[in-house]
Image (cartoon, rainbow, N blue to C red; front, side, top):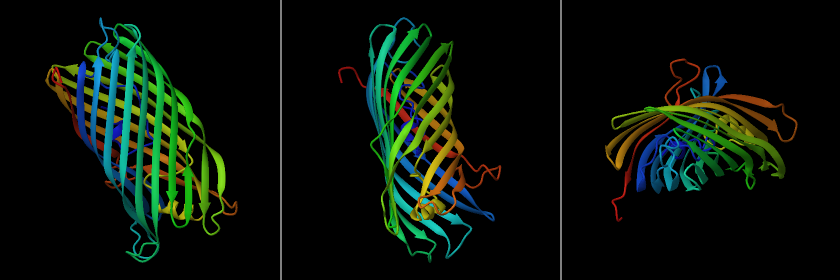
Length: 389
């Protein structure tokens, strides 16, 4: 089931083939619900913060079939498998600068929706080898109302945001007794747009090329896994801004990469998995939880370049209810930082740098500087359909 389709971070790692635990052999379904957050925080100075967040509430449904590997080969990944998942969510955007009050404060509020899909196909060539293909699409679109420093409850403009990441991968998996490894070729297409009365920017139509690798081992009641993926290249950017709205078209560098290690322990009818992921990206846009500082700069003709670094910790606990059903609780904890470089398209104003913290909604946290983590938490279940269904 994973948390990739149930988290708010569209451009974070999307591991297509890795699984936390072996699915049931046979045809079955799955269901999950989650609450997720993505938040960004910038220290304006003088004890003031610019804070923005997006909070989706997901419902996931899935259907699929699996055939287990034979003779103890591999480490839990089925020899053959097909799976379709859909995760949909309404979302809410909120941005504020505090403790600034009255005129001079930039705020935003709005609503949106997430539409996430995943398809996985795995076909056994021999008892030890399988080919696998996957497609993931994660997207969010939102409409916000902005007040760019005016009187309270007097909105300056409307903003339409969109963000999308599409992953396609083709891989090969080989199994030994108690161990398996896989390699894949990946294409990733990150897209985003930001439209207001004062500016327009969009990226689309080009994919980043890369690859991935995964290893997985069984050692008694333990499962150990590691995986990595990276894609890089350039994406076309189109920008316009007031007052002339002259078109600016250029290619900008982009990269998405992630490295994951994890372990699981099984006893009786219970499985526990803990997985850590280091996620890093460079993108020529900001399209999720846009700060008020960024909104004013982009309307003023500045181009954003974002470099983010995050640590993701996923904890899941599953309990089997019968031979063909189990329930699951999961939690994702994420914390990191981001550097946004703002470059004046007219070449007049000096370059600006924003040091942004990726921290959650619930205050500054115990450290006073790092902030609280972004959270994703929820419940799920998977089950086999009755025979003859």
